[in-house]
Image (cartoon, rainbow, N blue to C red; front, top):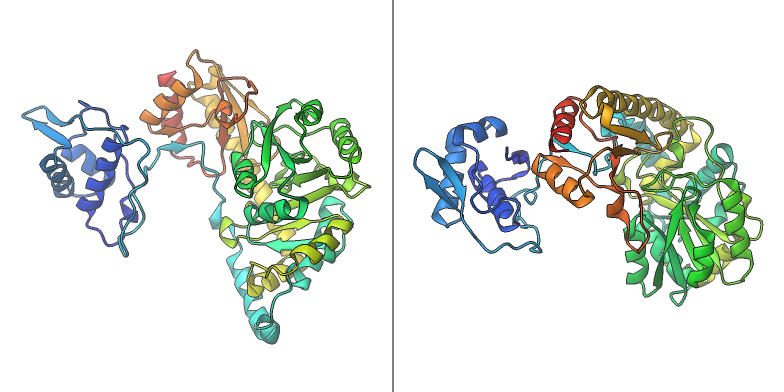
Length: 463
């Protein structure tokens, strides 16, 4: 059944938006030549619109030659030249968002539970800032960020992560992507950067966009393989030792020490520690940071509030070793801070008042319960005897190993046809490193519990 989010149509008439969505899927090849479309009544019921809306959309598609009607049989897709690389259709002003497919179940998207955000506390603190920091809000913000926030972050890192750092070592920026760009400028575009494979490829793309060379380095059961770092000629390593994405591997202390020795062997080497979801370790104590083990100033630590609060805030920070912090002030201190002072002062009070840690505690309880509910739903579904959950102790994702003969690409394609969006572990391989197939990366934070049973039934059926 075709499913689209008509609430995103803006000022467009419902039939026009529906027509555009179906036309897009025909041009992209998601609706194949000869494929039968749902009946007008069935699609109207699925989308919650009147039959006339679907009838008008179908009529426009037929008039333009995208579909044809066959008496007493229904509507069928006509042959057209597929435009697989065509950009998404952009709306004009007031016409809402581009057409976006609505999935019955989306394992790939990683949502933050917005309904749990403490709006009342945040609004009260923001009013206090507007009242008490009125003059400070109008002054230029220091390049590294508001000092009150950097002080609050230093205190929090000592309490929660065991890091003893000065506020002067902390740089606040609008998102980790912006901070990656600063790191390339600070460490040098001429260096070779090693990134995890499989891994989050946007990191490599950002480094390349800034003129740096990138090497993909393999990940095993202990994290990034040190021998590959040595052989690759990499001078800067970007890794996530606390919880690797997407495998979920936690790097043991022996491997951490091995990588620190690698960094110490050459004065130009450095390690970027991406601690993107360290707060959400759901069992046991938080894993100590790599920077906490570093005694020679080779590790740059970066973290974000996108997972803990909301991506909408675009607030991240990095902690630089003392020598690099001084170099940053000399070389890049001319950059203006990219986060508004109002948000920084509010966040500073949110952290120093203990609200942030209480929020994290509540969210860990919530996500632990959600993870357990998703795991129970999988176990109770037809997949229960044909799957195994792996690496579920930390972060907002885990791996689901499926017992199937389908290749990963075919599995993803068939699932998409069934309204289930999958991303297998192999989809995150960017170099030449083999990974175990039939392992699905399950981002469970945004899954709808009510749709889980049907989605899991469909996934089991296509296997």
